[in-house]
Image 1 (tube, helix red, strand yellow):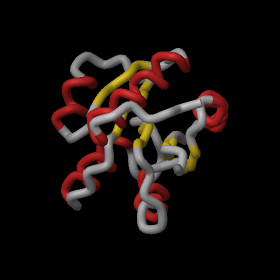
Image 2: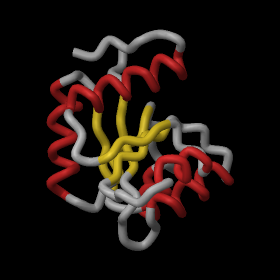
Image 3: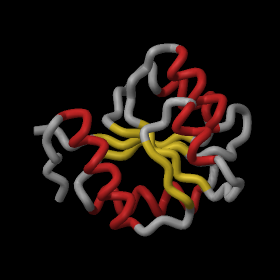
Length: 130
């Protein structure tokens, strides 16, 4: 059985490493991109099970990306993980089609539970993460 895959979209290399280490240790395959434009390109070649999406990125930010993928009919579960603290951010991203929102910093255990829940909602069962 194939491991579930997670696409981490964040322009901060430290965040990508932090997320990747927790995800790989839990048994997920991990892909990474640095902004919305790169992510649109990579989604032509891979089909991740879940995406972790930052909002503040160059070229195409997370808001624009969410609008684009939902307009294109891409039904990938997306958890927005952002350091933005503005009021209404969580509501805005949910209205744009995100499946959830977490503020940075986020503990790996919380992130992994969110991913498990998203996968369970999509597949009806919890994945076997190691």
